[in-house]
Image 1 (cartoon, rainbow, N blue to C red):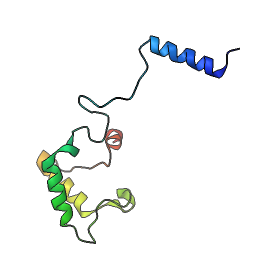
Image 2 (cartoon, rainbow, N blue to C red; image 1 turned 90 degrees about the vertical axis):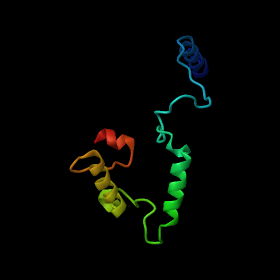
Image 3 (cartoon, one colour; image 1 turned 45 degrees about the vertical axis):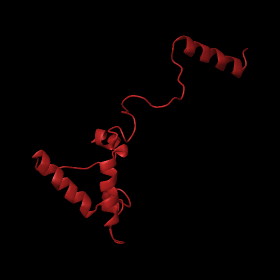
Length: 106
């Protein structure tokens, strides 16, 4: 009977022979697998606008939702953005999702 290590090495060799092994490398191309798939984190104008907006927030203004919107996460900023997006798209309403995963579920 093969040892666990020998069995594992055999399986890894099989995967390599099929071209199914992976390795870490520097990102290249368009990123559709992260939360920054639009590349907005590196946009200088957007970063400057965000810094400017954050500098205007007072101590009682939310920096982020404290929990899910159904529990206590709804803010005036959420509602205002949904109204603005609905007007922009010419729709009666819009709904923000906290993640792409939840948007896909919705």
